[in-house]
Length: 171
Figure 1: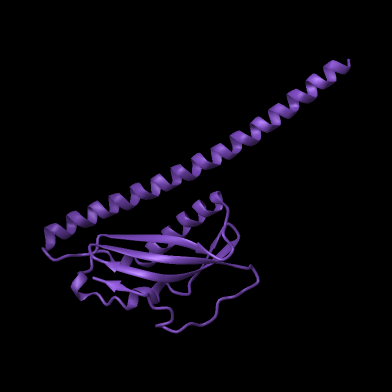
Figure 2: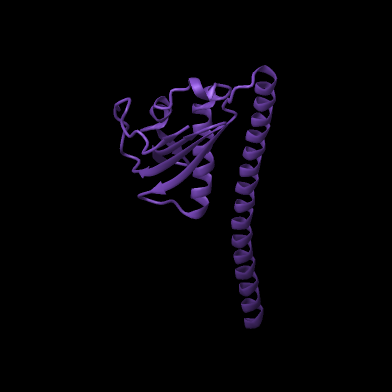
């Protein structure tokens, strides 16, 4: 009877640990799938935009927006970091989507950081304040961002249009 109880207890403990391990692995796979779907969608949009721009004119136009995100301050865990990176990337691409198809020579690069700087994005109950650190413009707009974790009690305040301009703008 005693051995049976130990066997059942061991079986339940083993099943619980296996379930815990597989749940974490499933979450990692789900995030990887979401990231790949996002990349595929962005690549499809980039291809369509490129085809359209080549057929219309021979000027250099913006066909893609590529955010590069680093976390500052209260850093999230690895899983939270991937989820936050995906959500922030999606939000920045939505904010800057009107730039796609624009002629690079006619673009005002000072306006791009103003569109993003100081924005607060909420991801899974956490808030991140964005700051542009570097901006590169060619056929792709590459925006290097710092995402600083905020406490849930802070609120966003008014900001200057030129507050936090990037260190470098390259065309």
